[in-house]
Image (cartoon, rainbow, N blue to C red; front, side):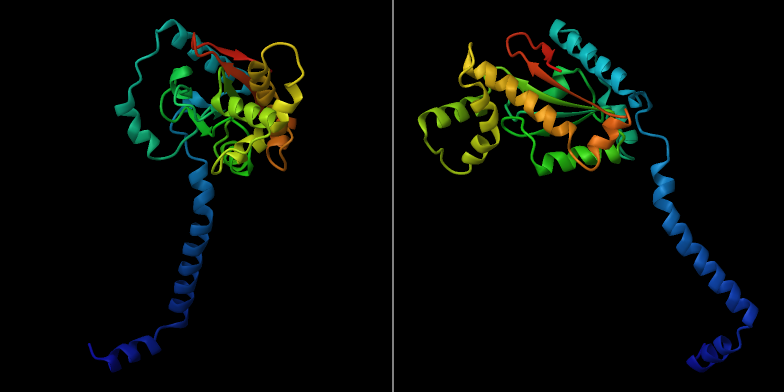
Length: 244
């Protein structure tokens, strides 16, 4: 068909047809605006992960008991892949040290899609970790967050030595010392092992900081939709000890 014919046909479209077309286009735009909300309300990929904060903590600790006893479950990673391509709904978020000996997914005997894990040497909060946990809480409906320290933490030990000796570590390592310093300084004059005391204090301080993180996390705690706890991983046994 020639361009003239195309033009003639377009110019003779009935007003009613044009109104219908505009209405159809408007409906399409509206459906795009609604789509994200509809998508968010679909069934979660792991329905068993919809838990209260109390039940989420119990599930974590039961998993650790199995891990300690060496009777971990056999996880079917193959058949859960399809469900997890459609989203995630982890039942707990873990702030863990980057230490290669600490593996939260193993220590709590969990499968993929169960834990939302942030890792940094010294397991301390920064803006990136808080933002990540805000995402887990607000978007993924994660009901439990845990700060997980561990025995003989090298990052804490280095911070202690740097502060005691008044030395500066190379590269970007001083940023770790700065983050861990409040816990070290709070325990330098305490009785007992300084490293053990500082590791525990580091967990406790970061739990306290996370509890008052605004404007999302503190509100979820106030609404009793979120619980935050601290814990210690014992390297010699694999046991996780709750601190708060």
